[in-house]
Amino acid sequence: MEKRIIDFSLKDEKDQWETINDKVMGGISTGRMFISENNTAVFQGEVSLKNYGGFASIRTRPRKFDLNGFQGLEARVLGDGKAYRLRLRTDDDYEGIAYQALFSTTPGEWIVVRLPFDSFTPVFRGQIIRDAPLLNIDAIRRIGFMVADKQAGPFRLEIELVKAYS
Figure (cartoon, rainbow, N blue to C red):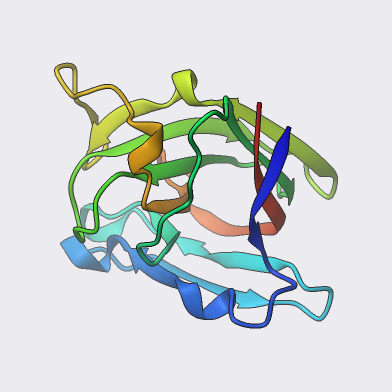
């Protein structure tokens, strides 16, 4: 069973996303998202390590995804060879615990990334939270992508869709 949960061919999907870069902590990295003429999301920018920065991210505005009964998420992406994080949040707060799973991309090649929910690690500001509650799949309110891990320089990740699988 599959469920398409993020579809950039839908007219208002772009309006459901926000950008959060390391400027929130004094960094100077840039990142933005736009919808291409092929109805894919393009997340691109440049990561800078200056001023203790080092990340760029996009995420959905809070909404209910209804993922009960699914085992994980699958995304079809075109990357640049860098590693990215798929991030989940279970609250509407601006910051707090996020659950993330790392995936690698192949330069210039479309790949399908399949991440089971039990592979997501709880983090807060880049640090693993050892005593965090388990990811509550029913409570997922935000889905996002991040580039970090001292990967300075330009980045580009194209996202066709995200779906849940069981």
